[in-house]
Image 1 (cartoon, rainbow, N blue to C red):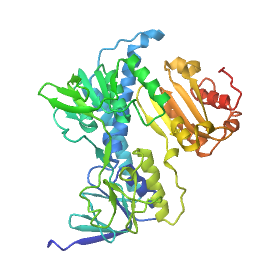
Image 2 (cartoon, rainbow, N blue to C red):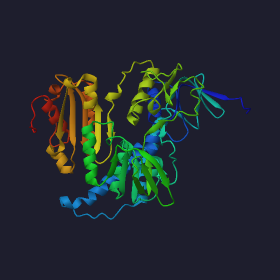
Image 3 (spheres, rainbow, N blue to C red):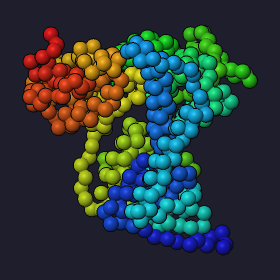
Image 4 (cartoon, rainbow, N blue to C red):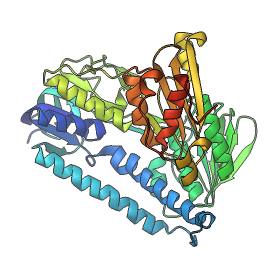
Length: 462
């Protein structure tokens, strides 16, 4: 075939990227009767399934089991912790990923979705080119995801890792430094500490998980101190030097830290370079795709979803946006979900979960005099005491108005945040929720207690 000769294939929807946003768009579009082609250079499921959400949560569960065995004697169970077998943990983790991967492949096939393996490039039309084949769509969805960022002058390699390389480690290190105290940083800190590693987090801002309500951050910090997880706050990273045996990290205050490995967890960047986006007319801003509130790019019939769109970089946000775009393409009018109604969870030990506005942000938006907040300590919750977790529930409302933020810290509280999402999303008042009694004994009662208190009739709190 000559260089300028191409074969062409057409479909109603062509999706560039088969990660969370891409495959969600594909499944929903097919469900709505559209023919769909997904172009994916690696494996469908993307970072979340293969290198992010799922494998890291498997590691966190392994860590939870390790901690439970260590503490078993405290509740009268005779058990002995003998250590971590990295090979078997890896086999467990990879088995879960492989099962979910096969399930997703089967689901795509059952919906009649064609998956094309190869590196795609956007072209005018709109279309996606893979080698000598052009896949032309009535509509094209960009869903190429993100990559692990680093800092200027800090090269990844050797003993300086991103989360991708950290997942592939075949050993349990003695000491690790984690650069970044956001979600990725605190999750890996939890895993490694549960595996017996000496962990230190370096966070340049004043708190861990700095995007969360400060009460949640402080509660997490206290819990990490009790677990023996070290951290430095408010001092920025300066440089790192590595040898064959370890890494030395220097901070701007002149202090130094040493460890076997340095994990760089400073966020993720949009994977948009080298894909022909700008050449095809798609506007970018610092690498992110510029899209309107309905996720339409600057090019007609080209949409963008997921981590390449500015905002929260969360798999479930990508799912929602993929579904939203598929329904838009099908001529429906799906409801726009504001970012503040998307739940956020750090699956550390303890977990941090939230939805809506923090108290500080609510005061900025509505004025401090218009905001009321209530905190309920999990020490008063029987189920939390039974499973051995401390923590905090915080609910933010407008005075005489609806709940606008729900924030939680504690083991397993990620399972509670959906109730918070419904309350905030439906603009419910605490007085509306108070009559609905939570099952006893459950951790959800802690949320109920906070709602009761804000409604002026606390039961188990003074």
